[in-house]
Length: 145
Image (cartoon, rainbow, N blue to C red; front, side, top):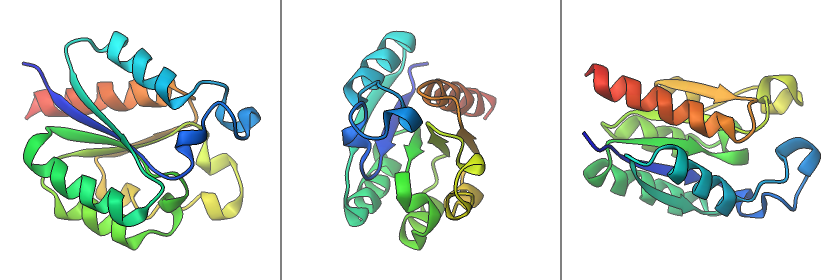
């Protein structure tokens, strides 16, 4: 079965490869998308990114009717967006939260996730492989249903 998965990225992830490369690495968002498409050739991906919280909410709402699940890197919204938390909770499709860096090993304000409690899981700290692990975990969850 070919799964349809939304890879959703929040604020500042459009600057991957340029910003804080010592934390986030040198891979660009386009490079991550290409690597995921190659590694998971049987999955039909939709890749989206926005720096605007309301747009991300709308993308999550839209995904409920056309995707099997979401792999979501909410960026800085992770730590304080009740709107995104409520959007994830409102849809009936599974969501995996992912982060390039280990948010639990960083500044205190980054250790809390508003989103994780309404997701099926959270993966952080493995660079671009956090996305790979998130996709693999989501597919396993979908296939167990």
